[in-house]
Image (cartoon, rainbow over all chains, first blue to last red):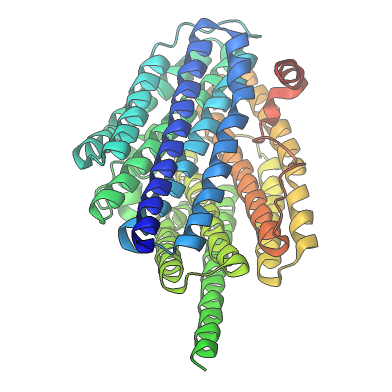
Length: 243
Length: 243
């Protein structure tokens, strides 16, 4: 009886943990969406709200850490249950970074709004939409414990890297054509990099989900090292030589 | 008797864990030092070795994760011991990121070495030396459980951010003066950003050491949000309004 009670209540705690991770994920998704919208619309109010909203995500991460550590200490879980807790810790750490990157996009948008607009960079919203889908799909895969969905989201990181590479080249061209756009373009470059990094963290989450559900890592055929697409083919050759 | 044996052998396991974290830290320090040396000397061989050397750091992180999770599962530690294990996990995750950033500096150096040299950017090695000291000091603080040393290293992140800001401005000026340097300068900008981010991770490690030794967080007066020094004063004002 007492055992059954402990078991049920451990499951409830695990559910609470998953729900809190999802709440954090929802906030991170919203922060990213708002940051990109603020950028596209040159909306400093919204950008400011993104920047000041990051603290909420950090607070939830702390909550998850404390809760998970308490569970580890009091429940002494094994195997699957232990993976569930460690997985929540890993995912919340990735979500915290996603929140940081979104907030950084907000900060840079505030700066960009004080400069003359650069010609419309449509690749950034396209990239952002792709990354938003990845974040959403990996979180769905997490709650549904859906291996296929995790792998599918994971494999899209290549597309993000390709968009980032073409955007990087586009921005270098703009800067060369009109040096007055250099400051704005460097901020756009860092914004694109931030979004590309969010894609990497979504990839991490997909890997964690894979590990949680299957017990095996999804590392072997990782789409891209650390998303350094702007180096082009030459670097791949150089790296090949160094292997 | 049996209890004493368990206790002693748990302590031994903790020591092994700390030693492995330190080995990982030593590698990360070496990777950073080599990456900066490769950049300064335009040494592509060395840069290539940095890039290909990152896998070793990742492998040690995996080792630490596995070992720590096994300890959590089998030993069911409480309080101090639990903090020791969670702390090792956190620090190894920061060291893994430091390794990634060093490897990225290596990759960008390979690209830079195929372009004409930009005028000597002396600020980068200065920044790197400061960040290397921070990493070294936080690892010393970790092994010596030295609170003062951790706080001292932690407080130096402001200097790094200042150097980064001045470097950012310097590079924008170079690009405006001579648009042919734009590609090289953007890589130097990302290199500087990588080094600045390594400083942030050293700051994280100092915070973890503080938590490990004192049981209390060192978050309240964090030197800088996420090191966005290049935004200048205007942004601080805007952020102030949004608080």
